[in-house]
Length: 141
Image (cartoon, rainbow, N blue to C red):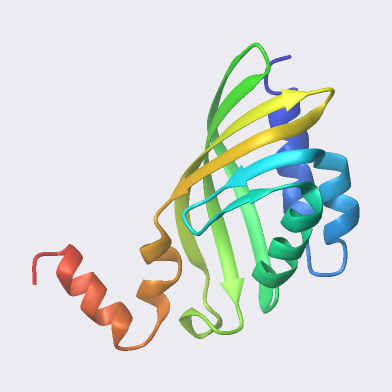
């Protein structure tokens, strides 16, 4: 089934927390994975593990819901919605962000991932004062 790898990927990502990062990433990513998001590019699962350790510091909850996916050979594109709750953002309220991931697989592991999402909506709009200014700019002052 074309969506089986996507379902496996999201199932593991939805289990991810600060205590199980290495074990989850080992199940999902190839050792020599390339990971790109709006913040940075990372090469290698060990560096990705370090990055996720930093990202998940303060995360209370992070869940992904699959909206749509397409597959051709071992390449997947999935549209998702992330619901994030973080100790330092949005006063412990849920932050909902839509995004798209491009995944390349080999031997049942992700070898390449590129994420597209609105970093401003996820982080900058959640910071007092700065968030209000960004929202005003988005909506035409």
